[in-house]
Length: 63
Image 1: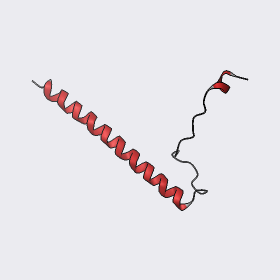
Image 2: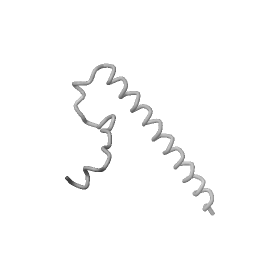
Image 3: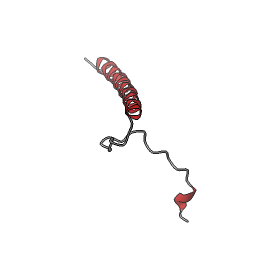
Image 4: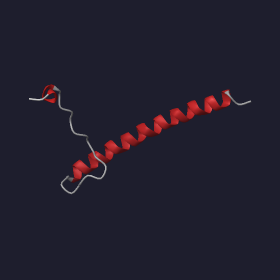
């Protein structure tokens, strides 16, 4: 028994870039597309927020 045996197991990721998709059904593929669209939207929102902070900082320190 190792120390890791007592740790809760993490569920596998919903999608791994580059993984074999041939065994997935059409419904599973569509579900993954939905997850990826949601993730893209989340990343774009985070990027927009960071751009807003950067723009505010740039305007504050502009001479």
